[in-house]
Image 1 (cartoon, rainbow, N blue to C red):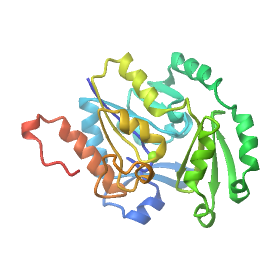
Image 2 (image 1 turned 45 degrees about the vertical axis):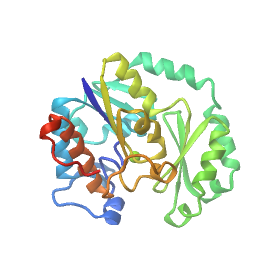
Image 3 (image 1 turned 120 degrees about the vertical axis):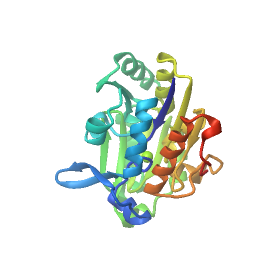
Image 4 (image 1 turned 180 degrees about the vertical axis):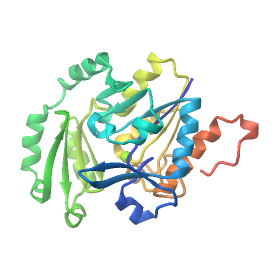
Length: 271
Ligand SMILES: [Mg+2]
C-alpha cells in the first residue's frame, strides 16, 4: 500500500492572502469559514486529483491545526473523507475522526521530557518579540503561537527564534503572521511513521511548506515543498515545485496521481 501524507495550509489549501499574493484559479472553492469570515480555499484541479489519490491510495492529511481546526475544513468532512488524519503537528492521530489512544498516551509520555508549556509561556513572555505580538495563543495545551500584525511580522528573525527554541527542546516556525513554538516530540513524520508501521504502508509520498514539515519531506520515500515554502529557505536542496501558490498544489497532486500510473505510461513530470 502507498500513502500520500500531506500538510494542508499553504500546501494543498490556501488563504485569501496567499491567493492575493500568488494568484487564484478559476473554480477555486471555499472550504472553510469561521464566524462568517472566509478562511481557506482549494483549487478545482487539486480537488479532482485528491479524489483520485483517495481512491487509489491512503491519503493522510498531516497538519499543525488542532483537531477542531482540522474539522472546520468541509472538503475533508464531506467530499474526500480520509480514514486517518494527523493533527496538532503529530500530537494526535485521528481514525475516522477519533484519536488513537495508544498514540496520544505515547505523546503525553514524550512531552514529559521537554520544557513544559507553562514554563515556555513564561520564557516567551520575556522575549522582546512578545511585545510586538497582537495575541498569544495556546493550542490543545500542547503548543504556543504568537500572531503579529503585517507591519511587525517583518521584524521577526526566524532563524534566531529557531535557535532560541531549539535550546529548550522546542521547534519554531514562522507561517504568515503566526510564529509557532512547538515541543520537539510533536513531529509530523513520527506520527506518519507510526501509521506506516501499523498499517504496513510500503511507500510514503509527502508534501509540506513549513519548517515543521522538514522531517516529513526528508524522511518520506518522495517528498516535495511548494516553491513558496518556508522550509526551502532553510533547506534549499529539497524537491520543490516550479510554480508557487495554489498552482503548486495542482502540480504536487498531479505528480502523485502520475505516480499511480505505470512508469512507461507516465507523463513528463514537472519538477
Ligand atoms: Mg503548511
